[in-house]
Image (cartoon, rainbow over all chains, first blue to last red; front, side, top):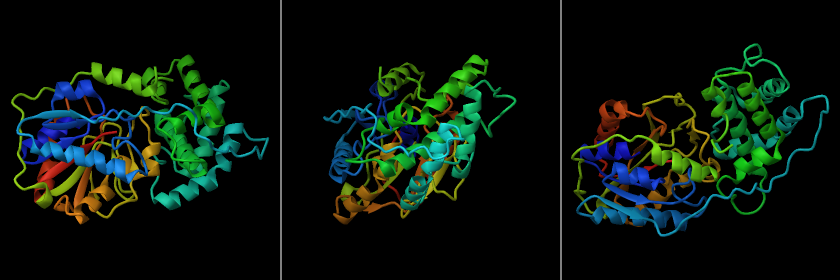
Amino acid sequence: MCTLAHVLEAAGLATIALPSVLPVAERMRPPRALYCEFPLGRPLGKPDDPAFQTDVLLRAFSLLDATEPVLATHPEVIIADDQPMACAIPPRYDPELPAAVDEALGLRAAYDRALARRGATAVGKAVPADRVPDMLAILDRWAKGASWKDDPVPVTPIAVAHDIRNYYVEAGLELAEGPPPGARAAEEWFHSRTEAGKTLMAARAALREQGAPTPLWFYMAAGQR
Amino acid sequence: MTGDELMRAEAAKMPVPEFEDPAFTRPSTPLSAARVAIVTTAALHRPDDDPFATADTGFRALDRADRALAMGHWSPNFDRSGFELDINTVYPIDRLEELAAAGTIGDVAPRHFAFAGNQPDTVAEIRLDTGPRCAEALRHDGVDVVVLTPV
């Protein structure tokens, strides 16, 4: 983002960046920057809070008055919420299926509602939503000892992990109760409350134990996990 | 260490490109007459556009009217739920429309642009190729001011 600020500015455009990592902004010195210590992934701070978002933009626009490069700081700090969001999990339906597969099938209606509401989905890096349960079946087999080479997934395990997690987050937000969940609350729900989250992490550990290249398994989940 | 703390610490250690004698462009028009565009590095794209590849140095155009956008970023290390709840958390297009209607800014650009934030360390393509091409498109659209948002 800071690189783009320099490139666009050199082309005669006035830019204002909203960086999330202060040391990077300090080193890259974009022409005008409003450092916002908000959760990563939420550069405007708060979903469904137009007044707050507008305030961020107005503070950013005020930097256009500066006569030399400027790095300002938004006065509010927002910390990500690492408590799992309150969200119902589908009851077990078909005991013949691996638990994560059964669970994913049970979330399909909520996923479809999310897609209808948003008109777009992040699922599809490796497979469409229809095949998310199949991917969980493969990850379940890896976790139980199957070889990731002999029982492969399409594209990469990372792409499949994105599809599974995005399917769950999009469905889960439809089912969540209360005010908008804090940042990371959906991620925490996925990992600590769902069978898919447990299966994904078990498959990730299995890949590591099977000697798969580190980048192939490490980026299946956030770095702190 | 939380996910955000870890990522901020890791990002702080990463090599960054250097810009000698960086440009500084004073806006040629007051904000109330300026046309404003958003350029985001959240890898947003229309569902009917090409998704972002893992090392994608290109950009996608977003029409002013687009709201059904997907986030095609490849990093697992940031929150996506804010965007799913309200795209303005990342891409404040509705806020710009409101500020234009109120006369605070002059106009909202007809097109906005998205790159992927996870780039090769040299960022050579963005510096020399796709970044200047995006600037050209913004200039073509008569844009004066660009708000840059990451994820």
